[in-house]
Amino acid sequence: QVRLVESGGGLVQAGGSLRLSCATSGNIRSIDPVAWYRQPPGKQRELVAKLIGSGSTNYADSVKGRFTFARDNAENTVYLQMNSLKPEDTAVYYCNVVFYGINYWGKGTLVTVSS
Image 1 (tube, one colour):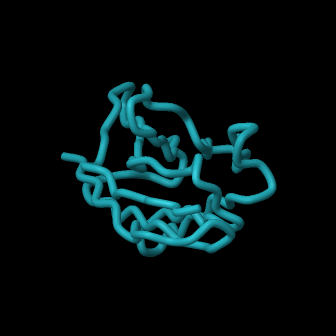
Image 2 (cartoon, one colour):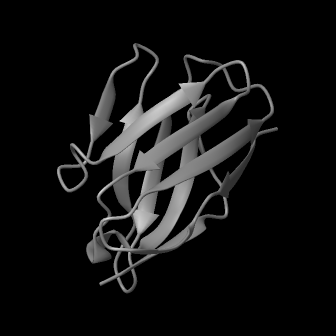
């Protein structure tokens, strides 16, 4: 019922920018929580940013001031604008939604930041 497709990853130099997109399909509502996670090489998956129905967005300390979460309700698409990228931002980035208590994930998009 719910499908997520991430895009926008790639190879950039430190200090550069990328915008990730997550296209959603199904019956996702604007009040359903959405989030971006990432999994760095050799590490566990970690939360990057989460947007809840109230409009409040929580960012991981490591990305505050550099990443911005946005949502286009009309297009059912969420975005992650990433600026001032650092090598430690290298990871596979995943889109996540919670729908009726169930977590749904996309397949991820790879972001590689070179020194």
